[in-house]
Image (cartoon, rainbow, N blue to C red; front, side, top):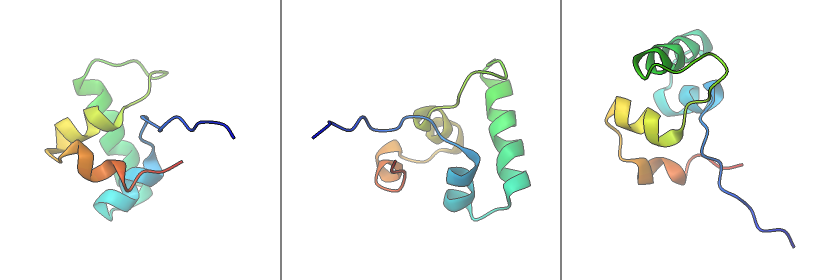
Length: 67
């Protein structure tokens, strides 16, 4: 049996589930966070970065975001 590596990237659908907002809002929020962190378009946003920006404890999301 293969060991599973926990996912550290956060995607639009994850943000939708967490915030309860629309897909468009979630995409815009990810873009806004990436811009504030000076990330390029091809770089991903991590769960830790999202949590720090939103003021959410990171450990509370690890149970929600599964592969």
